[in-house]
Image 1: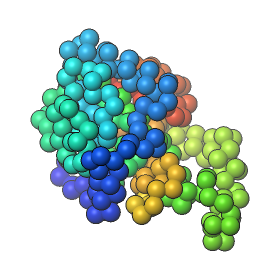
Image 2: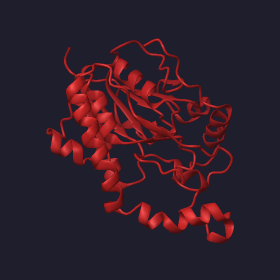
Image 3: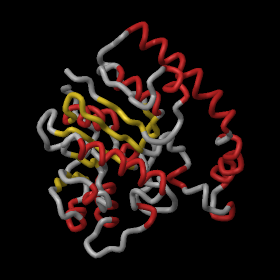
Length: 269
């Protein structure tokens, strides 16, 4: 692909350099694997990679809490400071420009990272490029980052907010209601699926929505996120490249997939 990735703003690198500064105590809000179900899921993925003798690349490794759960591990993160937390091979690089050869990893892991990348489609292209045929990738970002996340409306009081944001906070229960969201999301998914089935384009573009990340003050989870992604768009994107979804074998399961981890298997080319 010839287009250039969108460059991350200087504030992003500075923000994550501070988060992962040597000697800084890991904050629970930034520690991957903080939920029991997530740890169990990732550990099962890594056991499978070990059993296959696959080398594992973790994109957006942060403090790399899983580095010792697998024999062949490589971490990559935008902040060079992550090197202080890692005792295995590490590269300081952006997710949109991975410094590795094509098809060089049998497994790729990325947790809570894609929503923090300014060009998530380019990140997926890189992930797909370095994944070997038959290899598996486990994607677990925060899907559907809401436009009010940078303002921390979930945790801030009305008294702290200007009138416009007070109105948004007031309507948040409605905007977040499952029925309201389903009425918005599923018709668009069906239209997107129909358009792809008719075109069968091998270069289906990824649809995603930019979010104005807050790199000044970390207020709440994902206040530093910059992309909102529908996982079904990611599913279609990988389908167009011949990938499969072992845990979502049919279109019904894929259409209804809303949140959680997405396991992708690259075709054996």
